Length: 173
Image (cartoon, rainbow, N blue to C red; front, top):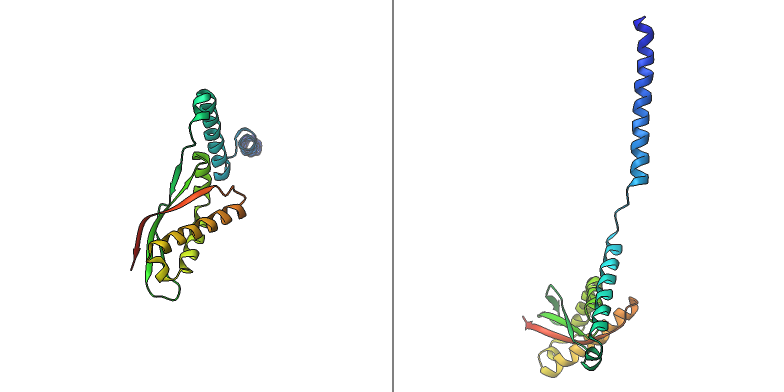
C-alpha cells in the first residue's frame, strides 16, 4: 500500500516543482519592467531639464525677452597633455568651452567629451611649440580648437554652438 502512494507523491512533487518554475519565469517576464539603458536615462533627464527651462522662460515673460542670453561654461575634468609638433616638449593645459545654449547643451557636450578630447589632443599635437609660446599663437590655437570642436560636434549631429575656447591653465615643459 505504501509503495503505491510513493510514485503518486513523486509525480505530485515533480509537477509542483515544474509549476513553481513555470510561474516564476512567467511572472518575472510579464510583471517586471526591464531596466532602462544609460542612454534612455540620459535622454529622460535632459528632457526634464529642457522642459523645466522652458517653463522658466514662460514665467519670466518680458524680462527674459529683454535680458541677453546667459553664457555657460563647460570645464573639461582632466587636463590635456600632448607633445608639440616636431618637438620633445609637452604642453599641459586645462580648457573650458563657452556657449549660450544652456544646461541641456552642456549635458550633450559632456556626453561627447571623449570625442572632443581626442580632437583637442590631435590639434595640440599639430601645433609647433614656437606658436604656443606667444599670446597671438595661443589665440590662434584657441580659434583653431574652436573650429575643430564645432566641426566635430557637427559630425556628431549636434549643433556647433561653442562660442569660445578658454585656457584656464597653460604650461610648457
